[in-house]
Length: 245
Figure (cartoon, rainbow, N blue to C red):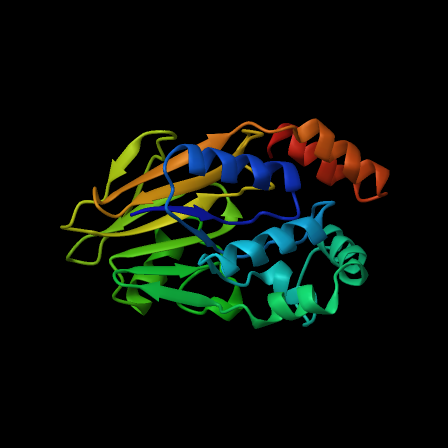
């Protein structure tokens, strides 16, 4: 099976559509979304509808902190809060109900899927280094943990002694997930990358080859930035899309 794993779509229609097209062109046979369908971007209605269609077709979908903030109290910075307040009245009851009902984690065999750190999914912990990755390894026995939330792709391993190491992410190359270790991959963001590359990020997990490929996909970031400006949303969010940071 070749599973396309997406996270942090953030209401970016152009990036979401480009990733789906790229994944299908590379033989994806299933999809998983690790949360944050909304927030930051100008097309929440289209992105939630597209996620709902994918789920109806068999995709997995989790709740992120921005999805949760639509109908629950969440700690967000001022820009994120402004966009959530703009997003909330644009969503239908069915769309809001879909987001509120999404689970925080899913387990598929040896793979755990979660939006943020696995040790406390509702606390939205950022995994930014070996020290913050270690609690996720200790919290479960999954051989592979897939998460997002950080918007910067990273890969960590945990050996039999519990030592956690980071591995430089190699974009576009299959990374063998050696069976002698456990693994945690932080995916790049579909809709708001923050690693200096203004392209949509996602991953392909090949369960037959036991291999993970981090991918980047070009999309029309300038058009999305123009939409943000036209809607009167924070200028910093438009600049972030153009610069990828």
